[in-house]
Amino acid sequence: MAYSKAVLATCIAALVAAAALSATASDGSSNPSPMPYRPFPSLDYLAVKSTTRTTSFSGTTLDNPCTAVPEAISVDGNMQLTTYVGTMADGRSRVWLTETTAIQGTDAVGNVTYASGSSTDDVTYGPGPFTLLKYKKMNTPDQFHAVFVMDFNPVTGEFTVTLQADCSNGLP
Image (cartoon, rainbow, N blue to C red; front, side, top):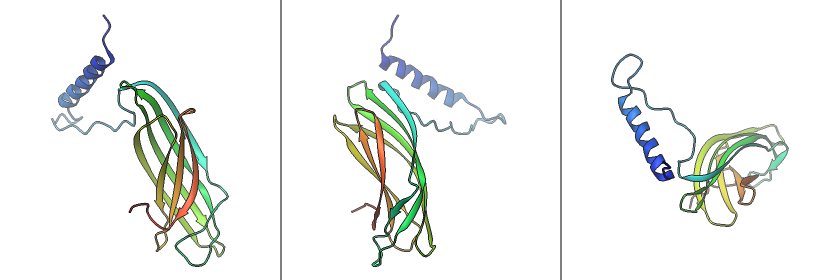
C-alpha cells in the first residue's frame, strides 16, 4: 500500500513528538534534556540539492566608509555556506542556508579589525535569481560593517559571495 508524502510526513512528526514526550533523562527523571537541534529543512521538499562551500576573502581590500580619511584595510577570512535547495510539494522553490563567517582586516598603520558570526535563512523564491545581504559589524567604534553580498543562481542552485563595506547595519 502506497502512502502520500503528506501522510508520511504527518506520521514521522507524530512519532518524533511521541518520542519526545515519553523520553526520560539519563538520571531517570521525567525532565529530559531538549532534543538536539538538527539543521535540516522541513519534510515538504520533493527534490533537494545540498552543497557546502567555503568562500575565501584573502587579499580583499575594504575602505571604512564611516571615516573621512580613506583606509585600505586588507581583509583575510572566509565564509562557510551550506545550502539545501528544493521544490516544495506545492511547486514553490525554496532554499535553506546556514553560514558561518570570520574575517580579519589590517589597515596601513597596523590596526586590526575583525568580524564574525553565523546565521540561518529559509527563503521561498520566484523563478529568477535573488540577492541576500549579510551585515557583520566590524570591531570599530563607528558603524563600519562588512557586507556579504550573496547572489543566488536558481539554475545552478548556488550562491556567489562578494564582500563590500557599509557605514550602517542595513536597517532603516
